[in-house]
Length: 409
Ligand code: ATP
Ligand code: MG
Image (cartoon, rainbow, N blue to C red; front, side, top):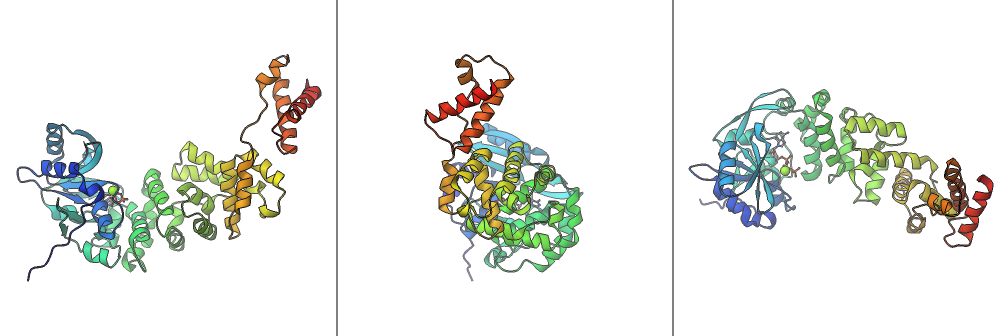
């Protein structure tokens, strides 16, 4: 009987001429080269392919030599593990030599390069991530990935406990891929192993945990997945706060395009102290930390019922905390009550000015001498300007400033 081989559609990034050229270039002198991992998986389930990983029997030095001889720039991104990034027509391809992991310590592996595809397929994490495709899109499946794609099942390759002990990050990867690709209940063996091995997460670098967790927060079934992580006792190895799953649920329902930091804030930020702990636990950037802190600072000041709050008060809060932080904090505050920001309140928040109209230069121009009183006058004028609901035109604004000068000069 002749069976048609399974294929992926070679469209989008997979149709690029640069990909074909690179695969041809690598597959010389008896070497082989295949598209692998996320690109094949996504093409099979009809999701966009954002990046292409290539696996080859050619050694890293051969990959570099062949690429450079064709005039392609190479970057030894992870050369110890056999990964070289090759730039072809401005497109980066991550090319990794077939390898097996000969020693692991739960965090990183000592690798052995090889010419066989099977050990390379078996060292990958999940069956759906271990599918290879040749340049025509014909699939090589050595671990049962196609059946699992069809059944929308995320399964470890081999014994889940053993595979997790090689690299504890696989616990979080399991939750992420389960969230993004699976339908139905999680694989029982994988879930039990993730639960029993969870302490191993404490041995990982916080940067690796951060990257996976922020992706989980934006994954397809983020809420359900974070809830499952909490239920199984895995979440406390990621963040210290007791999670507010319901607020996350409402925020995601009302704001499906919300980013990871706003989702994190809804889940775990109620005070500035919590922002500090999250910054340390998840190695947040200064900008991410500043956003969380601004939200935490605005939260207690904001009303639970903004529709029945005087517009002037809302505008003042918006000015004090900044439009976007005030709006984000309000989204979280209302998500705590299962609602969202009405359009009218949204418009109002955005209608507040975003900067103070009074400057030191203005005062100096009136003949005042420089000194500390300048700052005091500006603060007094600003306070009055807010209290009068931001009059934008002279003469009111000028009068406010003149009064402040009278009081403090
Ligand atoms: P995406 O890029 O969409 O998150 P991906 O499958 O491409 O998904 P990567 O993290 O880019 O994921 O990894 C590429 C491939 O390398 C994976 O598909 C998998 O085969 C393998 N891989 C990555 N991380 C691990 C790991 N910790 N353990 C085992 N295999 C891994
Ligand atoms: Mg990838």
